[in-house]
Each structure stands twice: as structure tokens, then as C-alpha cells.
Image (cartoon, rainbow, N blue to C red; front, side, top):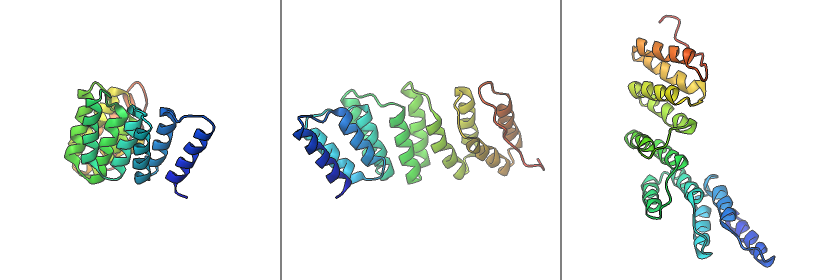
Length: 205
């Protein structure tokens, strides 16, 4: 029995006991399907939710957005964000992170950058997930100038990220002979007031 069939069986059992599935129930099932990469099960669950007249909230939409991102269906993800806005469900940080992840998965740097700027435009702040998704991709593409700016945004926003993410930017700058910028990031790592990062430069620099 597939996960969707199992979920339907569970809902049937709830109904027998006089318990109607609510939004929390469906969000749990949606998250379990979309996040695990079981996209079709997620879509079937979404359809079932609408037939039960349960109105999706931001958590429902974010689960679906992540599912679309994992399936590299970013065009549909953007359309879903527009649908959210029409229904007065304001996209949050998780929504934007899902879109960025989708474009990173598709190898589309320009759109990933665009949705990064949308975070600030929508009065949100990039978080750990944002940077740990976008920064390695930017470094991989050799966009060391942008990588440096993202690192500065990390320090400015006092965002806690894994040191390896910052080190990627330092290494990329050194590789492109932007030594002073690399040294600047290393210094930021040492002197910022919220978390010290022991970033390193090659011994011959």
C-alpha cells in the first residue's frame, strides 16, 4: 500500500470514529508527502483536502512549494506564489527559500538571485537556509563578487551559518586573486560580535 493509500485509510478510520480531519491533519500529511519527494502523493492529498473544503494556509502552500522545487517545477511554483497573493496568503521566508532552492536545483542563477532580492522587498530577512542554499551555488558558478556580498549580508544580519559555507567564498576569492576581499571576509569572521568564524587563507597568501 502506497503512502497516499495509507493516508486515506487513516482518514477513513478517523471518520469512523467521528473525527473530521482538519487543517493540521492535512498539513502533516502534505508535509510528509512533498518533503519526502512523493510529489504525486502530495498532489493527491492536496486534491483530497480541497474536496473536504479545508482551506490551505501558509504551511500548506509552503509544503507544496518545496515539493515543486524538488521536482524542478519552478514555473508552477511561481504561479502558486501568485495564487497565494490573490488569496491573501502572504509568502514567508519558507516560501522564498523554496523558490530559491528550486532555481538552484535547475541551475538558474539569475532567477535564484532575483528571488533573493524579493526576500528584502517583501520585508523578510534571509536566514540560514537561504544562505546555505544559495551561497555554495554562487561559488560553484564562480560569482565570487556576489559570494562576497552574500557573506557580508550574513555578518550584517547576524545569521548563523556553517563555517564551510563562508570558507567556500574565501577560497573562491583567493582563486580569482581577490586577496584583499578574501582577507576582509576572514577579518569579519574574527571580529564580528555575534559568532566568531575561524576562516583561513592559504599559507602562501
